[in-house]
Image 1 (spheres, rainbow, N blue to C red):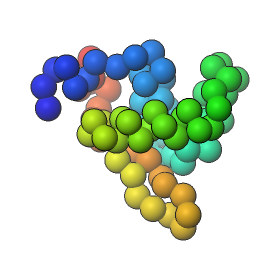
Image 2 (cartoon, rainbow, N blue to C red):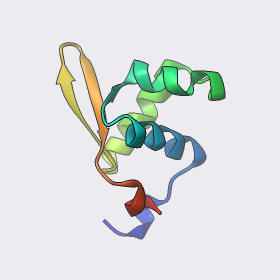
Image 3 (cartoon, rainbow, N blue to C red):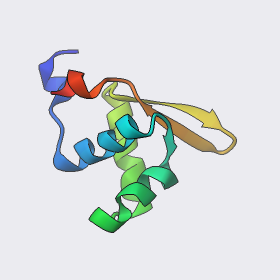
Length: 79
């Protein structure tokens, strides 16, 4: 990955911060952590997490019918 892979929007950075604080989280957990501050739809959170995963910044594992997401890069890497 080069430096441009780590350029994040404010929303992407907010989702990454949740995953840096909470090592693993479902879409619902990330949504709950950001809902009061941002008022996002749960589908928006799921879409942004998927896009971050496509860029290699986030990874997931399956737990039943849910994906459990974790950060694939550190906060230091992004800075």
